[in-house]
Amino acid sequence: MKTIIEPFRIKVVEPIRMTTAPQRERLLREAGFNVFLLKAEDVLIDLLTDSGTGAMSSEQWAGIMRGDESYAGAKSFYRFQDRIRDLTGFEHVLPTHQGRASERILFELVGGPGKVVPNNAHFDTTRANVEHSGAEAVDLSIPEARDPRDRHPFKGNMNVPELERLIQRVGPERIPLVMVTITNNSGGGQPVSLENLRAVRAVCDRHRLPLFLDACRFAENAFFIKRREPGCDHKPVADIVHEMFELADGATISAKKDGLVNIGGLLLLRDESLFQRASSLLILTEGFVTYGGLAGRDLEAMAQGFEEVIHEDYLHYRIRSVEYLGERLLSAGVPILEPPGGHAVYLDAAAFCPHIPPAQFPGQTVVCALYRHAGIRAVEIGSVMFGGSAKTVASGGAASSEASGSADDRTLAAQTGASPPRLELVRLAMPRRVYTQSHVDYVIEAVAEVHQRRQTLRGLRITYEPPVLRHFTARFEEA
Ligand SMILES: *Cc1c(COP(=O)(O)O)cnc(C)c1O
Image (cartoon, rainbow, N blue to C red; front, side, top):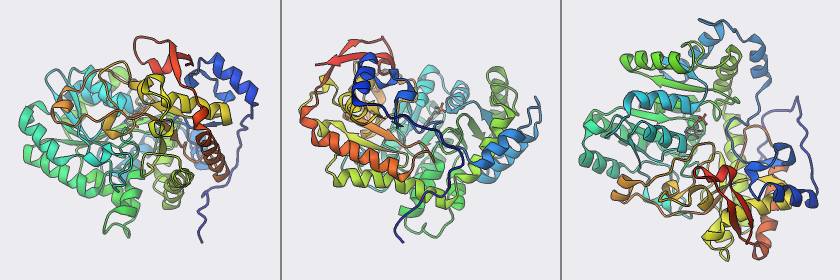
């Protein structure tokens, strides 16, 4: 059978509201052509982000009721800790309120001026936390990642020769750890292979450097490995997940992605003394080590989410629904970043609207057209988000919008030749277990229709912009 179904049935529904074209026209103008300024209830299908927007299962909701809200030693913490130990093999598990809190604790401990942190592609909060500590964040993606049409199966891989060269040049004593982001969010949700992780591990071993994973989408990455890496198709996803984590000395995780919850994060560590110091910082800024800034009920929901996310029916449906969106758009002639990522499809807005110059924000223009035409909210990842500074879009791909978008030049990246060209992208991020195939079909139709009349789209100009992070609050008018 060819049809891959949603492996769940629906127990609770949340109505979404249809709007008329004249209403959307008015709402868009009131929002200054910036979809961050729309009210969510005025959006029909919200593809702004996959972070914290997923649907919980009946078992997770049951866990919410079971949550033990004791200050210390709550049953919910031990259930969470057991689940994460079992999933990852890590002994030391700290809960945090979200991924960036884990990053802040980690880089406060290992970062600092003069330090250099390599990553296949830093996510924007990760980069911001590295830089906030005074260290320098360097992206080392493979050359294929810079070509939107290249269908490399593991386009998220780290550039191992560049990593070796960077270590030679700056010296291992300046590198507190090497980080690999799985899947590579800033590079378009592209996976990293086990072979690449092993090669990075070997470089780390040679120089006695710790390897950390930014493992927000570890389950999606593991499923791609199962599907694409030679010799892995018969391995259970749970075993692949173990293999990935076994290669690492630590991990930061936002549970808002593959934790299948709306809030939560983790910091995983092997080193005993680092764990002690991280625990002290956690207590200082997040909460006691058995709750880390979360409620007991959140820990229950996470324990259950980290169980459900490696179910292969779920992952098959998840990866396939994003792939389906990408394939259908390609066959309708819509240019996208290829191949589709694990959590999102990225439209190539420069190719979509070649008649609109970057100065008139082709990505933002397409975002506005999708809302106007069909009530769909996407996000621009291009010259609105990254313009106005030397900053470039990470690794031939996208970056994301969940966060802070630190702005500065990438001196080391430029020296290594790893500084990629800027792409004009529009990200359609799929919330987990929220939309059905007919919603996806609606999105496909809408994007294809907007693409057919792309010649009629008019660019934008900025009428207001704040000094930093302008994409959140800037206002525009039609050029
Ligand atoms: C979302 C994300 C983070 C940050 O997590 P938050 O929970 O949003 O703080 C870090 N790295 C990657 C790759 C992410 O996708």
